[in-house]
Length: 216
Image 1 (cartoon, rainbow, N blue to C red):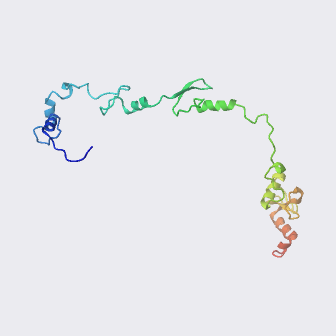
Image 2: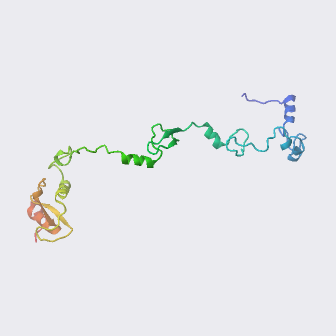
Image 3: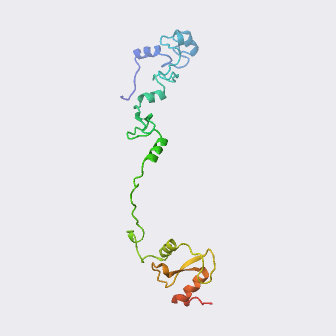
């Protein structure tokens, strides 16, 4: 629309006078108050377009705040949306609707889906599982592992030590001590010792520890 100053002609002024309170300031002859408007034949029941108060929604019958629509916002949204997809449940044979428009849906609820999973046989039933422990494992390193990995391997095969082999004490703080200190995968090279006996055994059998500690 072009911008600029518009001059009101006589025809425009006459049309404005016919409208209600349009183009007139308060105190002008053409300005109508509510009381003066009620006296005329254009108020409520006397008006030609009167239809019994505020319009109502076509679907739910709720009164509308505006006059531009025939439906309330909720009913308008329902009328404009796409129809929901309908399915039949495979477990309970109940018809249901999917609001997310998922074409691959087969069950009406999580309960029916759980019953389907219980009846379904697992994929690995009657199949021999391959053993992938030890040498059969592709990540097997043999003797080329560290100190912690060797001791975990010993505990997994021999279990937790119960009694010290030297002093015969039964405590919770027992270790698997290596005899030759080469830490290879030989279960016969590990003996159960308590912490004090384990320390003395390492000092006696390791040359680099004899310089730092004195055996009592």
